[in-house]
Amino acid sequence: MNFGLWLAAGAMLAGVATSTALTAVADEAPATAVSVPAVAPVDADDAPRLLTNDLTREAFTQAVEGIDDAARAQFLRGRSLFRQNWVVAPAQDRVFAGLGPVYNRLSCIACHPKNGRGEAPAAGERMQSMLVRLSVPGRDAHGGPKPHPAYGDQFNEEGIPGVAGEGRIVVGWKTVAHRNADGGVQDLALPTIAFADLAYGPLKGVLTSPRVGPQVYGLGLIDAIPEAEIEAQAAAAKPDGVRGRANRVWDAARQRLVVGRFGLKANAPTLRQQIAGAFVGDLGITSELFPQENCSAAQTACQRAPSGGHPELSHEQLDDITAYLSRIAAPARRAVQAPQIVQGEALFAAVGCAVCHRPRWQTAEAADPLLAHRSFAPYTDLLVHDMGPGLADGRPDYLAQGREWRTPPLWGIGLVERVNGHTRYLHDGRARNLDEAVRWHDGEGRAARLRFETLAPADRAALLAFLASL
Ligand code: HEC
Ligand code: HEC
Image 1: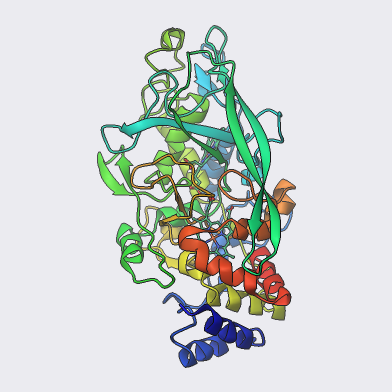
Image 2: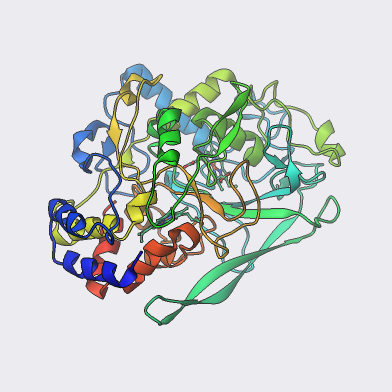
């Protein structure tokens, strides 16, 4: 790619107001402009019943429209399960018993505040909405991460009475100098983690992956994208040396490897399994998909602790919370027609962001008729990409390697500040604003980032305004 020539095209672009004009520019300069992925034009208004116009702090907690009374009741039951503080068994209230024996938090919402985004703690503060995945080199029986023999696949800081929590995670922050494509240098922030008060022996040679809880709306639509469509996206030719591949992960219900789509490395196959995995991994609640308590062989008190039922989360409860999370409306875009936003959207495509942050998808058949055959715009290709050494966690997760991450959906990202009161982004919450999130892009994202950094300031502001309108 001839970057200088591209800039000429970019300069022409700065003045364009519509994506039709953009296509014309691209046609005139095929060797330089990035081709926009072949998807229908983005018009968030064509499926209003799946999106919400709520702009309050409750923007991420609304149901899609069109659900009947029974579905509404189920939505509310699932919502309680997501917000509920679970308790230690045996308990009077058996419905919500079974916490631990080791766990991270009492509730789901603790890491997904207001169904939105968590953040990494300030230096020396306790973990709030972040967790640390663990493994040792090698693979488990299904090709997934190999759990640490004493600490398992996730560091559980807490334990119920009589069972030691695994220890403490100590977060620190350091500053790294980032050299921009235009020659300027800018400070970026990077969290570091260390372990303290280890209860089950040393944690040597372990691979770690700190991750912050992401937003949890619109997930039923992502669940309903046909696997073949994600495979087709992986196979499609892409500019800028972008590859991208579909992760393949173990589906515990179907007992086979399928395309992964949830989790920050696309490490979970279905919404239902992602939820069941969170229950056992984060809260220590067993379910039909994961009937084993999360105690390692070294954790004998953990193995002897009383259970809250077999399994602790009933089939109906798993149904209810899956229905809840699959029917939370994603936010509708704002100010779609404003000239700056229109320009930012054109630039988003022209600098190559949309190659990975693919705007539009279509569902096919879905168990939930409301979500079947719908078009929606999550701005992700659901593939994992090599994002360079700066973002790497060095911990493989099925096919996703240590430098690879799933392109995160960008829909609703502009409302995170309003809902969660912060503007922290990327897998470990290191970016302090949207601009910094882009500056960290490297590897397959490098070409797009370099163009972003050499945009005229007004153009970069337009692109960021577009992100904030999502
Ligand atoms: C300790 C913090 C924490 C707790 C508690 C927690 N989560 Fe999460 N959640 C995360 C993180 C981190 C991820 C990303 C996981 C990954 O990449 O493997 C995530 C991912 C998810 C996703 C997938 C989102 C996506 O876009 O792919 C869903 C759904 C989810 N969690 C639901 C739940 C439910 C249900 C519970 C309660 C049973 C729960 N979470 C409890 C931190 C948490
Ligand atoms: C090669 C694929 C690729 C390209 C091209 C790309 N991104 Fe990303 N983007 C990603 C991945 C993967 C992440 C997650 C990285 C992480 O969390 O470590 C990400 C994260 C982000 C985030 C943070 C999202 C969140 O939920 O924290 C923003 C904002 C973003 N990208 C915007 C852009 C913009 C703007 C461009 C164009 C300048 C762009 N991206 C180009 C793959 C890409």
